[in-house]
Amino acid sequence: MHPPLILPGQDQADMVGRPGGERTALAFVATGNDTAQTALKQLSHRFGNMPPALADVIVALGGDGFMLETLHAYRELGKPFYGMNRGSLGFLLNEFGEEDLLARLDAATSVDLHPLRMSAVTMDGTVTEALAINEVSLLRETRQAAKIAIHIDGVLRLEELVCDGILVSTPAGSTAYNLSAHGPIVPLDAGVLAMTPISAFRPRRWRGALLRHSATVRLTVLDSGKRPVSAVADYTEVRDVRTVDIQEDRSVAMTLLFDPEHNLEERILNEQFAP
Image (cartoon, rainbow, N blue to C red):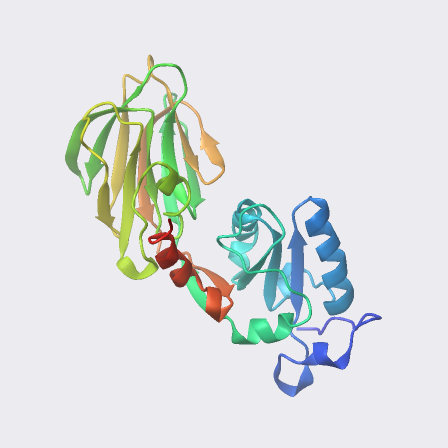
């Protein structure tokens, strides 16, 4: 790996972080808002900005949505990701700071996230696969409620759910859309996925389920011609689906880095006691 150039304004303190005095190679990526773009210029000037493929760490500047985009865009590189909040939400991010960035990276704790793999079949037979770091959700497309049958590991568990939709969430995503739909917050090491209905009409008392992380889920849209449904894996949307298969993909892992005092497990635990 070629070390990045030392740019004007960088001091010797920025040269720590790797054995032999070689500086940690960083790739900075940023969302389009002014705050993130200003941070990008400042950090690139001080630390250099390597192409992601040549960097030791990819640093994302933005909000949670941009962090998800960054994970999807660069996951195949196998690099760790460190996010700093320059957007609106920052659950997957650390606080922004320039002065002690390399020391924070050296002290950071890591967590591996395994996404859900969605395989959606549309009414015309088209098959679309996508990964979801947060959740896979099915949503009604029209004024009429969706009707969905639920199979878990090949067993029919719910013959007909009448609802606005349903989602399956990873532990990392359990504090996002899943929580807004009144689903449970899931600790990272719990080994389960959350299945949560969205505005369920029938069965009226069904509030969802916790599934083993190895479970295979099939959601079948009933009366799909009259009651069309779309499937969304993070931000990949497939319209007019007939069946959707969902399973955690353990062959894919994305490493996120967090400051020790604000690690992801602690944040998820804190969310369970939030007022």
